[in-house]
Image 1 (tube, each protein chain N blue to C red):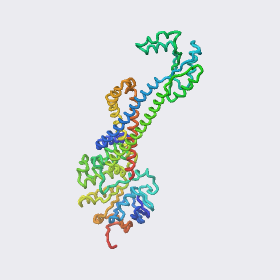
Image 2: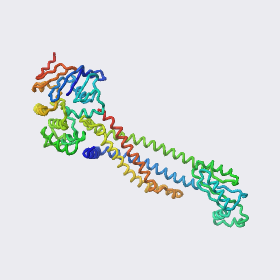
Image 3: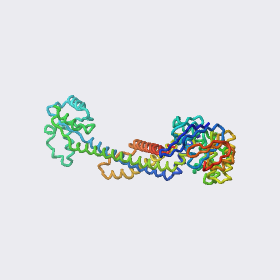
Image 4: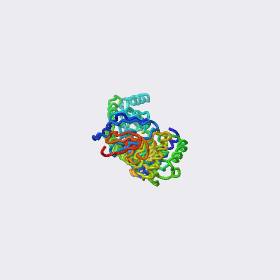
Length: 229
Length: 300
């Protein structure tokens, strides 16, 4: 479960990124968080990962009380989430296989577990045949799927996809969205952060709309973004 | 830590060094250079100290015994024991006037007939004690104590030479100490900078590790291991080079000064302490260098 309760985030430079944001995402949900740039979408990701601390309010992520947790628990918090970053953040000097195995290595999995799990996850994202390639040799869409495989490999409770359609063409965007829906069907909570309204309207899912650091709508189904509203 | 993680650490350290080969070579190069300078200063100072020791050993106090004092073996022993009891005295040798006369005559070489007629009853010399001391800094006080003893008529010492030796030793110690301090600071600075650059080139990797949920310890370990490996490699190279420099450059240079020949410290006798110094420098600089540099990149 993810809970934001009256969360404020003020940056030292005076920007008020979030102004009293409250929402709850139950386990197994599929949620879009939509909003124009500057609405506070990336701030939410940063707060979820405890990359930044919020100014006031309460945040609970997968049983971690983010306000009160100690710094040394941060890795455990992050292990409960798999994040697909907009810029993928793959390690250039490692092969596809190594990039995915790396995420398991980091949390101390045994070689045996890694050898069994990595090919399986690469199979899910349809990249089993490219495991020996380096990220540079792959297309944008393929790199994104490697990032997704890496996010999935440790079986996190929550997958967060940051602008999954931002850097790939529309056909690939649809493919990745379908993968995310498949993953959601297996029981993982999926949060998709995007500014792409068309994408949101293609799927009949819950949409949390942000604007200037506040939630302006939280409904299930399509969402009409209106500049005048 | 399971076996998989252990091999991962080893592998990623070696990989890191290989991928940043230029940086690694630069680190090793700088570290070896600093070690060699420190090592050469150390070896030079060891040799100077050995030379000083020798000079100091030769520097004895000669105390002439009052003729009124008994010359039987019992009083000889008593007198020697009395002088030996003074703290700082390392050895006392009783030399009869006959022995002293013979030595004096010998030292004249071809002119030894000058002393004809002064043998036996006519011997003008006195019985004497030849005293060596442990610590040259106590020379003055010991020689005063001895000269005040009633059995001793007068003494001969070389206070000026002693004073000079003391001041040379003090100066040398000070110069050696400051060179060491300076080089230690310089090498730490250069190495930590080099490691910082290496770290910078891998900041993406560190960043991603943090996002995937790696603990700080997990991220730090391969870098520390890398520092340790660089330290060990540098130590091995530096010891080998130091040996070459010592045997083929320093020793022949010192040997030019023939009077120093038998003071040269053999490499074997300083090998252990030299390796210790290098390992301490190598590990300390390697570990502190990487530990200091990585802190910045762990704050995500």
